Figure 1 (cartoon, rainbow, N blue to C red):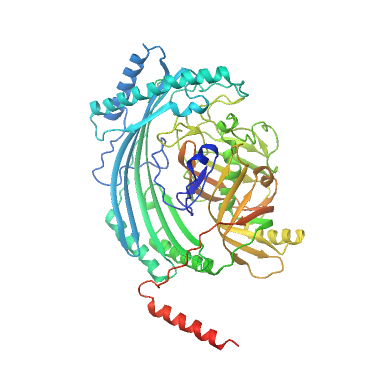
Figure 2: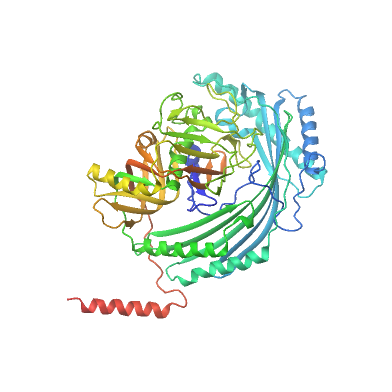
Length: 611
């Protein structure tokens, strides 16, 4: 899986090959704009459409013609398909509306000013029985068919498309069930004989939209001003400021009797700047911010100050030496530790990975055993909407299978207690705990929401650097590494590949044991294997830090958050990061010709006076 920063975080998404994504869990946190599909759950304070005249209807069980069309067609499909030889025992429709505005600026001008809306549907069907159905094992994708729905409120038009999608899905599901039964008969007996689908109480919930005005003209001007600030920095080769304002609404009805309507809104601002070192290494700094609406974003002076810091960081990184491979004590800031836990631990606690025999199943048989130091506990709680003054991207009220979101104590005082469950049961865990998540068009699986790490063995945040120095001296190391900021990471969970993880830091410092000033280095990645890395945590800071991100895995991209204090590790391994070798621009940027000429003359003069 890969996880990338969405809001209130930084980084860049790197797309991994699709084949590897089928084999491995890789999650990547980065600060880059990601056009997320609509979630089927309400986040913080839902909002109405960001622009006047939006066609997203106000949801309501009685007044919503889209919902009425879904309910009518679902009833008809169940009634007619019940007469077939292989009637579905479960059928659901989920319709997603999305209305968004994207404003993108570069160096003082807009290069994109777009508004768009769309509507599409997932038809999810299960034939057979909950014990064994068409979604079993590698046939899981047969459970859903997706398509675009007409906009507006024409119930007949909407019903016609739902009818066609239902027919198409039924013609996929029945042959898949035949294949599942054949494979089950000829293959060796599975270790986990759990059913394919759990029984859950059908829920009814109709959320209400709340108006959230968006001053498009004012934001166009602000984006121009913010992006123009990058013109001051000749070493910033590309920069952009992008605002995405999204109003979403998901509707779900099922043959079990569930009816869920969940409107939501989000606003994401991403500021990105790039440069290149003389050795060809591309360097990136990104700041992202997320809020339920545009009024929740930082004020313009604060954003301008962040731009100055981004430019200063890039200038320092260009001059910084490339780090060498290292194995020794390390201090992860809270954000870095949050990414570390998301990648190294969180994915291995997702329920479906305990059942899939192609997975490494790192923790499958460790329930009741100590898997972390006793002073650490881990919960995943999508019902929390804010921590440490930051809105959490992984918050939702209902998961994508219609189950209420729930707090899950996965690790208590170092001991493994539970897994993150969808409606796919696993051995000894037969019920969903509200973590079935997916992007539209894919089948839900157990996924992280808000992964929160807490500690009972803390020291004041200000003392953590000295703790790192003390550990370096204890081990006879000349320095320890401090990872201040992070852009993302990924992990591999399949048993067909090495059980490993990689975290991609941005700002990394050597903290010298002899008192020399800290030294910024670049081009380094944290690598390792999970079981070894998790046992090397010595202590933590006393403050929580949030990393919001977008995590991509088998069930697609979903918004997530990870929260953790800073952490001191007795040992951390890093490796050099691969990079290109293209030279920096040969010409100075427009307006800096004289400065470049002066710099060249000065360099030549210094060279001439050398003995």
